[in-house]
Amino acid sequence: MPESQVKTNFAFRDIAPYQEKDGEEYMNDKQRDHFRELLFAWKRELMEEVDRTVSHMKDEAANFPDPADRASQEEEFSLELRTRDRERKLIKKIDSTLELLESDDYGYCEACGVEIGVRRLEARPTATQCVDCKTIDEIKEKQTSL
Ligand SMILES: [Zn+2]
Image: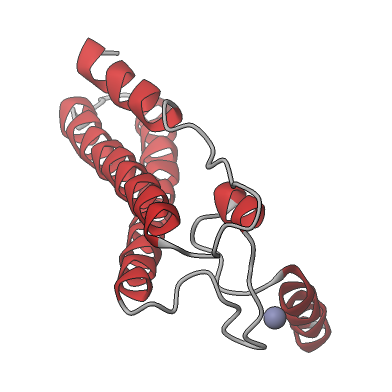
């Protein structure tokens, strides 16, 4: 792995979790700056991941004369394409979260309006629902998929 890519990964994890002070206002400028930084770093990492997949596939797109080799290569490519698709969706989600951050709606549950909480956002910066609403949503999803 080239050194520049390793550095990016470290830079992302270098962002220390936000330390709330007693009585600190929720989603004040400092908190918003922190999450903006986190989201941008995450997005950057994902975009590099996508680039890496593309160049890897170009490098490997040789024609294998052996059908068995070809099959395993195709399998590998389809796996990579699925990963890339997931990454693209995540990048979109990060973009819409960044918009939310600019419109002052970030950090509040879209379903019930309560504060999502710094700790939860730290673990899932793209969360748009509080734990309760998320849980209800997941139960509903399970029921409709039955
Ligand atoms: Zn909620």
